[in-house]
Length: 84
Image 1 (cartoon, rainbow, N blue to C red):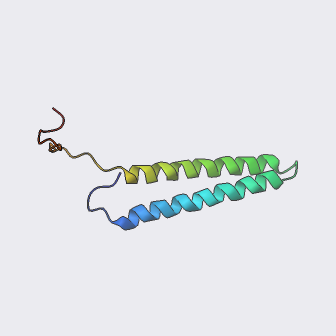
Image 2 (image 1 turned 120 degrees about the horizontal axis):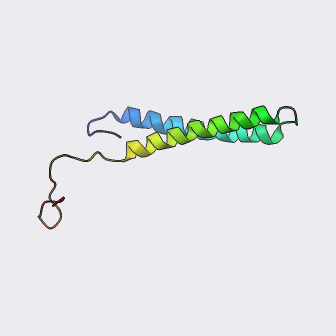
């Protein structure tokens, strides 16, 4: 989760890492599909590992996109304090 004032570079690095992990998932999937009988299990394991990395990267990008919750009360559009 990002804080106000966090450098945008970190969020873009996370997004780029996610994109690269997505590409790796596709590459490992294609390798698994093209693998011969002897290599199929190793390629499948590589594919699953790539999926795990992509999922972690996607979760980080999702956390980056969520604003932090302020501890201070916020005024709603109607002028009352929210959270009451």
